[in-house]
Image (cartoon, rainbow, N blue to C red):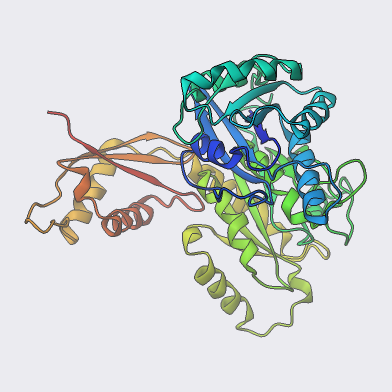
Length: 438
């Protein structure tokens, strides 16, 4: 099931980033009372009532030809293309401007559902200014205050009414859905073709050749799979700036639909900072992860090269210490046969459910070996009971006397003991400390 996408657009300095931060629930976007501060699209997840969705913050749209403003307008146009619903933000204090009318015309041509947010309406006495925004022809304007959170509920109610309705993706429960993520030109499309054994995806050395997320079902050793290939994005045949900035939302959407994420690294180039950012999306989404080092055939090797490369991976991706590493070459198919068995193993771990009594035995043994921590006042954490409440990812609730006493280092210790006992290869484990009800 695909999450809907809400894009926040408008001319500069109308408060888009403040609204984005409110919806995302954190100060993710840079907020400064200066036009042009937000230059790139920024992505996050939002939640309203029973809806979860992606939200995109954009740079302000201006219709002049200055290089920076032109790039920001292109970014906003790409966000509009990706969006299911557009939130058009205007400044209620300043009233409607000619720039607002120009942006409105551009949005009208998109034929996407649009909700109008009249921001900075902190004073109820200002609401008479709403009426001039009806002339935009985009529906009922909503008075809001991004800085105080006023009126956002009504705004999101209307936005949610326009979210597309999805009834699932049509695949059987036993089908393993896997996506490939990674920066452009690490060989994702080549790897898809190698897995499928045929040229199903266009392969080019030019970053951004893959324009859409492509679902390809196949069967191997009586196991059904769907591989989702994602990469850079183009718009109307023209590439805007560097491809990396436009692949993020496609990757997020693919991750959201996946059971297993293949995080592909270019073995020839090694690890760069952007790789960490991309891998973090899969980890934060709670998906099973396999780290794939591609182009291993062109790496000059000795008997320690693979060991040192994996050690480097572990040092850079501490948060993915549970993810197995597979070295291969999509071009020569060297070690390719090792990949799908690992994918199947981590998928099984991702959906593994352990018996409650066995889980509690493991927790009891762990506490016996390493007693629970105490706070400065001498109060000791007491774990009364443990139970697994869900899978994909495995989520375990520990009922304790006081969740505040659960130090992150002790939670990590318990996670390691659980992994020793049950495996959980390639999948994150969520451990939640909850106060035991009286």
